[in-house]
Image: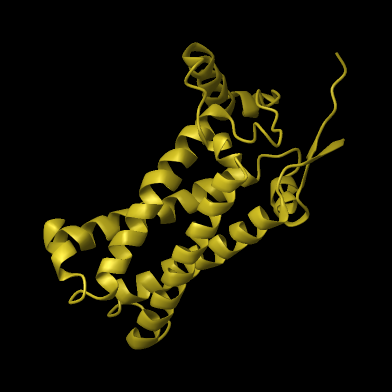
Amino acid sequence: MKKIYLHPIPVRIWHWINAISFLTLIVTGIQIRYRDLINLMSFETAVDIHNWFGFILIGNYFIWLVFYIFTGKIKIYIPSLNKPIEFIKGSIRQAGYYGYGIFLGETNPHHATPDHKFNPMQQMAYLFIMALLIPLQLITGLLLWDIKLFSRWIDLLGGIKIVDTIHLLLFIFFTSFLFVHIYLATLGHTPTAHIKAMFTGYEEEEEHSH
């Protein structure tokens, strides 16, 4: 096995703060939304915890943004549009691997490096999530945090029901995505290899002779 230093310390810290925050927001969000069905904690406690971790997530997002922009690493999220044919072919190969190749014991067509961390499908998904969905979730959450303070902005977006519906739909998406993310994290050379790498920073990859 060869080791590749793929996850610097700031990325790993950001990742685990993000993970803990998302899990906490999901649990407290369920308690807030379904307070008559679930009794994990009081409604007031759920709201307070939800608000605190919402602000932690906002701060963490800006840490991620500043780090990736100022280090130039933001390019790992951006598909190579100057080579569209290669990008499309890479996406098809990756989809084939996830769809059936992995079950036949085939090798992952993507080999991660510090400058080419994500496969084409991951690039599209993560760019969409980090550039659009997470900011939208954070903005709607902030508007719902203080409806009176942000009433003007809420009205511009179509009213409280629109803002709340967007926040809820994104909550459902991120909860579902969490299960997909955990599943994909088990697809290394061992079920815990990718998870271990988010603690150590090093991804292990089999060396193949040619």
